[in-house]
Length: 67
Image (cartoon, rainbow, N blue to C red; front, side, top):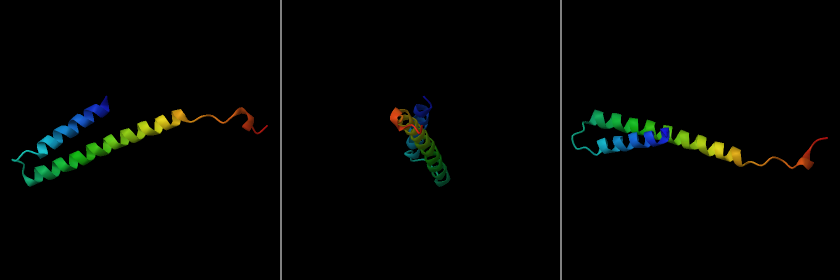
């Protein structure tokens, strides 16, 4: 759910960047915000990917015990 919110925010930032009336400082700030939001999205996707990998790992066979 949070990921969808971040994607929506990123979309809004890109829409604002397309506006013709932006000043250079505003444009720089929006680009920085877009990068920060994209970093958050990437981190969330990486975390989800790591969790999915952990869930798919299979335990070792019972015959591989030390005793």
